[in-house]
Image 1: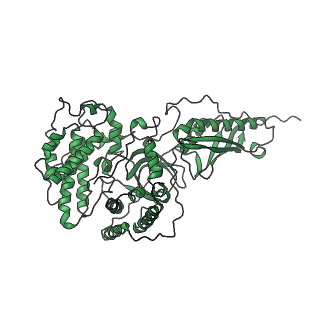
Image 2: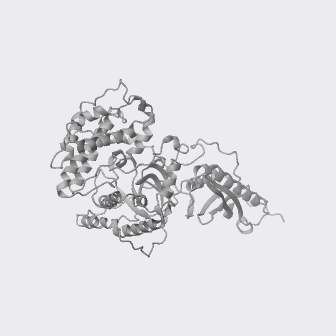
Image 3: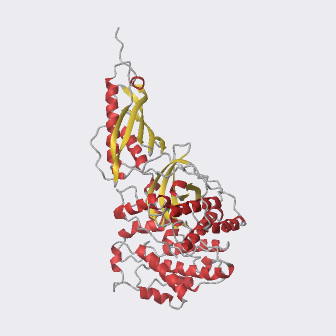
Length: 572
């Protein structure tokens, strides 16, 4: 059963042309209503039950070798996709004890929202997530995303899974769709790409079958990822199942039928429903249902942009290419035993399309190409505001402090001088503030459990015990490729979520503060030293948020050091 989906992050709702943020509805869901403990529409007694389930689930999921492994002190992120169960971001993390960035993908599993689903679905998803943690940590495979770290964000009631940089196929489809030709049946413009995707997924199904697991019946666009080197990988196992032995063969063949519907949509996204039904008419009704539902769910996402108007038009060829029809039939026929899936689907000779896919996905997400939130990149006119520097001091070092009640306490160092680009430093500071994740620190754990008899989380425990009985591969060492760029920011505590519309305000306020301080430096008589004889300057500015009352942002700046250019002559 597919869970409810939220509206996608459509291109028309993106901010600017660089970083992508969730639209207003998804933003509210991700930061507020996905956490049932903050939802005013949920009664207090239900919140108490959910709080108990959260605590029990955390205790049941064994903290393994990947918990908290990617230690970072800053997290900036770009929205890629969101459903009722997960949110996907491209992220850059500033590693702990380092000023270097590491780029990866973060998938947030919204456990809080899952715990608010009906009991049957809730149980399935919790078991699926327990299996997912086991699969990602232990059943490693070239076509399964590489897990880097697991973080439990308690105040947001979600788990953040960091994986090597990759784009969800759903995001690629949404980005590419509006640019397609009107009659492009295949969104990849190459007939071998859908076969290569199917081959990679089949490798994973085969690998899971060896451990009596199935991937389930997901929305395939949401579980498939493409790494930056073009390798297709499975990266979402929330629908994974470990069925009873007498049911697994039947479910495996239903899974293949669902995969066949997905493949058909990749090959031809404009087939009328009667043609889709014709391909599956020889098979049992349940298998037909999985196949048809998968095709329609995939086609709904693929049929975007100008080509969508062609659905059902007479000039559309209502057939799929000859090489693909036998593959579809083999998916619908199924087979026993469920092994050597790639060979039985006759995909062995499908060429490796990773180079082509790498070319297509690279530079789709900003953080994967080391972004800079400049005004030029955002197509915003930079204010004609000069940044003052001292005529008497070659270098001045300033300290900037921003404070917004208990929500923001951020510190930055700025270098001011003719030989440095102070304007770029200020822009980098604004980048850190506008793209910062406000949910990367956990409050203290709740030591007082809330008693409650109904405990669906208990179903997760047998999954964990079964997982412990399997062979666990040795943990690989994670080598983090670091960029050569250094970050200017020094310290951020309790970050507040700035919006892109604050860029111009922040720039103006910081530059004004810098200029007023430099004026005082220039008026200071020799031999007085600015960091000794000048006090810090503080200003308070109203910060407007959509739908919220304005609050005052306090900016404080002071000179903390420097170096004179040339000492003046001393007159006797």
